[in-house]
Length: 149
Image (spheres, one colour):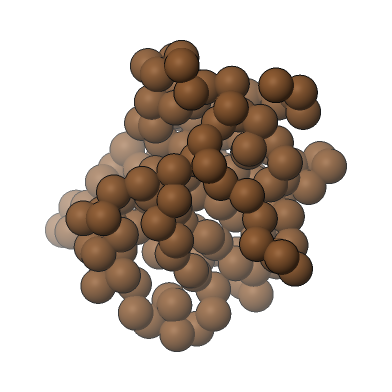
């Protein structure tokens, strides 16, 4: 049985999850979660931490909700429909240690018209030493964030 079959996650996404500096108690923001397969895998690796998976697509959010009941009931995963360029922490919501965006045009150069605003929103959602990772490295790369737009 392949990794994809055992984890319901592609080998590529599994490599990305393994490359993230995840620790127990981490708060993680996954941007562009799609059906949330990667978010579910991350939720298994952060102990009593929490992952918020966001996507701008109604269809993706519906798939994520349908496939993530166990993780959501455990309190380790929540899902929110919002675009990253409009994202902000909810009142009382703790900032995140890590943000990860895989194949997200708003941060990887494919949609430069919203990239600056998106990176600003991510920087405001992260803790002081929080980190943003995107695909394109081996297998990921860190993007340095600045708080100004």
